[in-house]
Image 1: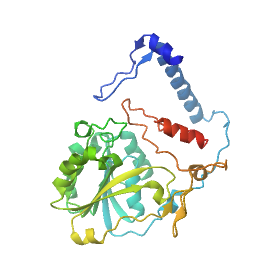
Image 2: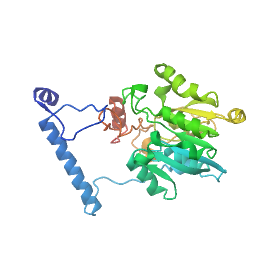
Image 3: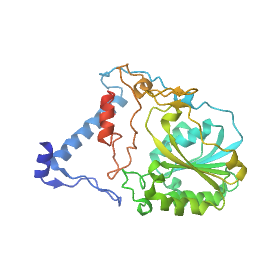
Image 4: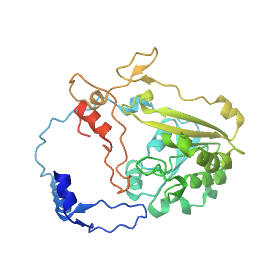
Length: 326
């Protein structure tokens, strides 16, 4: 009924102008926009009250998570190897290489708030953010001969369903910039990560022309697809990695990371531990059902730059079945 009411009323534009070429404004009536506006206002006031210490007591119990991510990847001694990060985001790959014993050289991240997160948590790191973190304007020659591993996950929107899979036609496609950095810096190894859709037939020509062909003369490149739950992360998350080695011996000695965990509720695998279900990982009470979380999407993607992490009917049903509010 509400949808019918929406269709019979006049749509009004948002008060917030958008200049992004891929922005697709949502069609909303004046009444619907006002409803969202009041929700946002109430949320903002509640946040301000909480920051002043005036928030009301929690109406739900506060549980202690049982999953310690540090246990999934123990910190190892320094290896005498260096790493450089592109498209750093909140530092997922950066932290992974740090825990694997690599010395961090610098991070480059275009989103200013993500860069601030890195600065806050690693004040000793060299972090370039905002305009200074725009890889399109960086002269990479200063790092030539200094980098053992160059790593990064170029924006996935050009290849993801949420981003409409425009590939090279999407101005957010930064794989050419990743390739430019590799060719200039000439690291011993590079690791590029992206959504699994990049490995499908739809983008086979793109991968060959944009990633493999420009680098295969200097690098021995291997492709692997990994699932997060194979390494103890209680989430359905599938990603493709391009791993390139300048030295043939390095490529020959490298092997695909072996799974350390098996999916909860499936047949046990000898030598592997079960991945926690999402309820167990969050420390929630046992309700007789538990499983991996649906893929948690970025809240900064999609046609309106506001995609919810629950962006599909299937994910919403799964969270509901697990009695978790996404």
